[in-house]
Image (tube, rainbow, N blue to C red; front, side):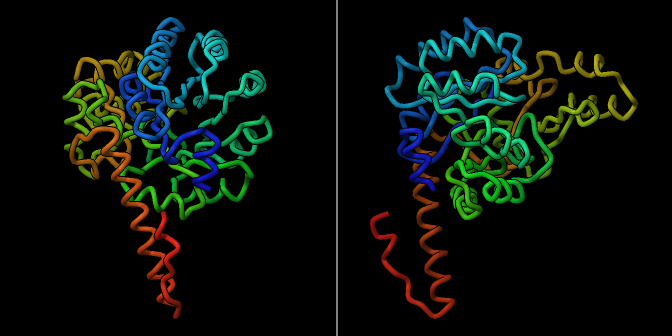
Length: 327
């Protein structure tokens, strides 16, 4: 399956960088693509002019395949969708909605379309609409989340659709990558690990907060609004949860978080800003280059899979073959 996603996307390794708003700029995305993964530009709520500038920079800094993540709630989603056609973007991932009305046109333009989904029903719907693959994102992820965990979601989606499934949520090292493949995933998407990459333009205070995070530092806000978001706990999240418990209106909650992600990513305000990060943040202990991250994960996963396979063969009375010798 990993070979399938590599061939589909024209990449060396089945590892995709998440299209995180304010974080996934051309600096990070081009470094991931140059290292053999698939770098993704994160549109978020940006306007079409910003997206066009980012695409120009991507094309100037890598000759490898890359993608753009279109957040479908963006007020300029239609204009950006048209821009992606004109620019002949190799891969488009989508989030926060149904991209059905765009898929046919994108695919006619030669683009591979990979929606991010959080349920089996949505995966089936995207397959019927013509998606080339789906990202099954578990609730362990940072940012906007669904209900199901990666461990439960991925195998159910794999069983439900015929297109490749890419696992996301709670994956940051070789162990998580190997586990995702065992669940039937064709590849992995990671976000939080790349937030702290050396090429990431995220404020150093944000990176330091992620690196210092403990296993219990993750918090979910916005459940009462129907749009839950996973972040690292700080003064803003405590105030948000207090307001939720006291029955604050949607407008009051939105006012509290207005511009909060930019405040954290750009200004480095990790007290009042929204420090989006997955539950896996406690496993991240330093900053590496994108090439180092990808090499560590791919090499480590290959060794882990070989070791586990050999142990399994020995456990049932067989001998470990040399099938991994050329891996």
